[in-house]
Length: 157
Image 1: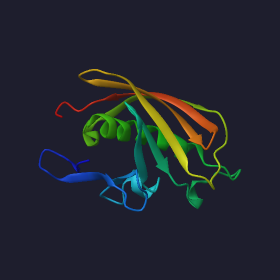
Image 2: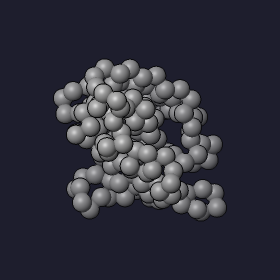
Image 3: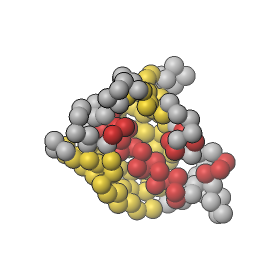
């Protein structure tokens, strides 16, 4: 995977093999003060099949809600971020200038902060301007949430 940059060549994020986790790539914003890194703690991605990608975050202590489960905002953040990671990893779409058009989500089970949280995302259809995706947020065999989203792709690829 290549580094992702803007028209001036500035690099915004990288998606490179993770030497500590064979088969996974590190999806990393290069500015650690931005949301993906500062709040979610970064992510790893790997292909699950044609047009399907698994995006993983490791819950942190600050990701808990008052009940001791993973906060819904963290789950929603993973859902949204996974749309872009999937498009980039599976289809080479430049994620830094794409935008979320809509995101529909359902919370199904509480998230366990002691286990990795994965979004398994499928690209349903891609047009010149839009991509339609759906996914499940899972921990082992437990479905934590489901979602679907539409992403407006950048005008320049």
